[in-house]
Image 1 (cartoon, rainbow, N blue to C red):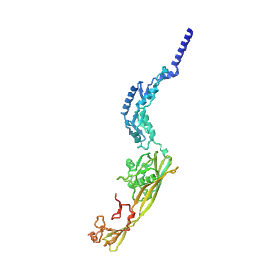
Image 2: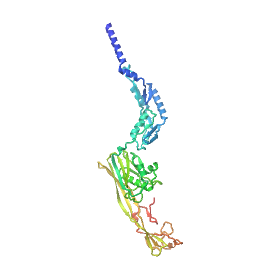
Image 3: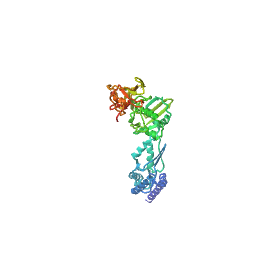
Image 4: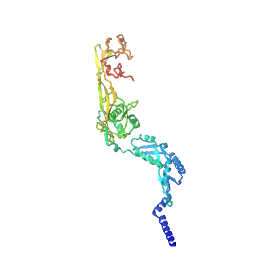
Length: 441
């Protein structure tokens, strides 16, 4: 019996020796040299309330320091309120992972390193959308890691990989340039590789102002028109577009656009797709190519210029007291005007879906034929006669007002119209005495 007791005692001592100096226990013993942490904050307590108070104080101190997002041409100060910390769930997780079963009482306490639980406010995400050259998700991931560990180092942005967006051409316009625009390269450089973010409105006027581009009116209108012709080939929403009210020599009627830097006229559109796109512009010799690229999708857009209706010009007679009786001169030849409607069809490349919308109806006034004649007594019975001698903008009927011409014998223009066709004018519009179209607002 005594021998058996001694044997058990010897075995127990050997077991205690082996366990005490086993590699696992040695590793744990060495690991106790560093403390457990939550978000890089050392934790020495196992009490919920004590840990919570400590973490909340550290978060408060962290928010008092500048939170800076930098890199890739950005330097943004982030609002501390955009970070939402869940301290309770973080502490609960910590206590759960740091606890050990009662039957492992002989083991050392484990060393735990966990990040803080934090959510990014939607306001911060919306703010980042203003920087179309950034990879939104990866930049958000960097910001979150920074907050999870209460880091005081600047947060690095992640640039968008443009090669991904260049995988498929969605739309393009190619024109031969007949204009000598010396300031064209400046605006093309500013727009080339321009990212069009998802859900964002792009304003050409704001882009010009932001980049301090000094292009003249003709150049800006050209670029606006080419952009418009490209966007018409997509499903993008056209927010604002104005007609030049004259047909340029580089695009057909209804496809041109106008931007006035001195008024409220702008060209705006919105990318309604879930993925961004990239604008590419190149100028080689006299050929200008504008392209829009994005990742492949099933949406296809195309436009048509329909309902073309010619507008007949009028003949305007101007009377001069300096000309000989019976003499007349052609001052300006007439050119017909035009009224057109632009329709866009958006369809699914792989399905039956198709929708058509009326994008715009544009009116291009005619150039009236003008003839200068010697002054005479107009025929008051002529129904087409519209003579304004007193300058009040209204026709003066009867021949008594002819005597109100310039007493000094200088030229005094009187206007008489022929071929009046009111059906060709927009509703509510009329001609003034100079032959111009007046459209009440």
